[in-house]
Image 1 (cartoon, rainbow, N blue to C red):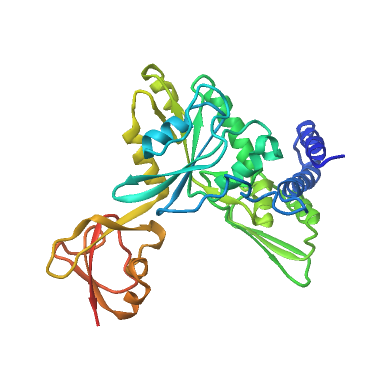
Image 2 (image 1 turned 180 degrees about the horizontal axis):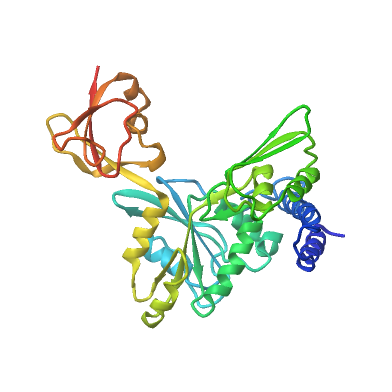
Length: 365
C-alpha cells in the first residue's frame, strides 16, 4: 500500500469515527499517524522531495520581504503580478501559463518587496500532483501569501487551497500554539494546563504522545481551545505560520459579497479597482515599520527608510540594519516620533523600541 493510500485510509476512518470519550484515544492515535505519514510523503527518504528545488523553482531572495502568489491555474495571478511590479509574467486565457517561479519587485512606502508569481496548483498538490510539492515548498519560505481565488467559486477554492497548504505544514493567519512538550529521562507523562481543555482530553494527549514514543515528558498547555492537531504541530516542530490575504478578482457588483470572507481584499486587475486597499493590507500583514535617518545639521531623509520587523525594531536593530559597527560606537540616539516622549526629541539607548515613521539621529562616542 502506498503512502497516499495509507493517508486516505486513515482519513476515511477518522471521518467514520464519532468523537466522544470512548474514542478520543483512538482519534489521537490516528491524528498522530496521519501527521507522520504526511511528513514521510513530503520528505521522502530519497531526499529533496520537500524542498523547493527543481528548475525554475529556486528564487534568489531580494528586498525586505517576500510575497508569494498561490492559486489555481488561470485565476489572474500573472496579470496582477505584472501590473504591480512591471515584471512580465506570461499571461494567456488557458491553464498552466506560468511554469516557473517568476520574481518581481514592488516598491511600497519606499521599501522593496519581492513578489513571486508561482505556477498554478491543482487539488492534490500536497500529495505531489502537478509539481505541487515544489510550488508549495517555495510558498513555505515567503513572509506573506496572497491566495488568488476564482470569483465564481471563491469559498470552494479557499477551502481546497487551505487544505493543500495545511497538508504541507503551512498554517495561515495563525500563531504557534502556546503548548510545550519537554522530554525527560524518567518520571512518565505529566500534563498541566492553565486553561480548560475543551477540544482535547488527557486520553487523546496520551495517545498522541504514545504514537511519537514519548513515554517520559512534561506537557504544558496554555492555549485556549487547544486541539490534538495543535499538539501534533508542536511535536513535529516543522510548521510555518504565515499571514495570508485572500484576493478575489471581481466585478464591482460582487464587492459587498466577497468582503465577508475573512482576510479578503476583493480587487479587479483589469479595471485596477481597490489596489490601494490591497497594498495597505499587504503592508499591515508584513508588520513592518519605517525608520528615517537624520544626519547632523540636515533634514530627515524620507526617501530611503530603514525597514524593520515591528517585533525587532529597537535602536540596536536599527543600527545593525545600517552597519553592525554603529551599535558599538553609539553614545546615544535622538528619536522623534510616536515612540518619543517629547515632540522636541528624546535621548535614548540601544534598547529603545521604535515605532513606524520615527526619525533617528545617531550620536557616536
